[in-house]
Image (tube, rainbow, N blue to C red; front, top):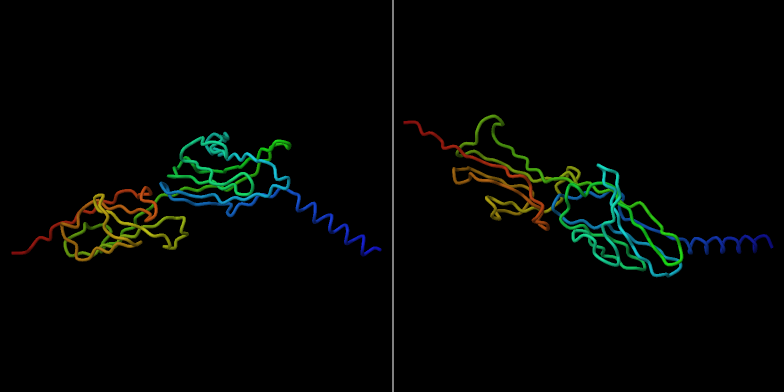
Length: 219
């Protein structure tokens, strides 16, 4: 009898768990490069199978004020796109990430019969692309015949070069890859260099100007 009672209690407990609201976020801290797009993967379990209105909000770090940025019913801001549905997917996509997008996010679920449920969502970190340059001498100018190595990096990679990049010279595509090797440079190498994520060309680094000096020939 005792074992049978324990079995029924366990089944009841499992039934309660199955009928609970559950919200799952794939990541708690998300890092994105300025100008790129990022997706907050989110799913939820709705035990009552009711129609749910999903609202996303952003807690602005400077003022600590909350603002609603996206809704499952209508578009509130063009850069914030709700890509989920009303029964299990609550994902959000942010286009052309800006520095003002940093901070904590939250997601709210409204149903017809229950009080609104609000859950903490991921924290977003926004970083810039950075160009590192190595040359024969840090202090001396770049001269004809020198070799210069440029590396495009972002701190979201954690020090590892795992992202795909495109290099530009004076705004024109030049090379694909994390590193750009300029061998035996000449005055024609001079120009403004930038890099961007290959999949997000709007995520552009600051301009690095290279000016190659003529090599003075001895008489």
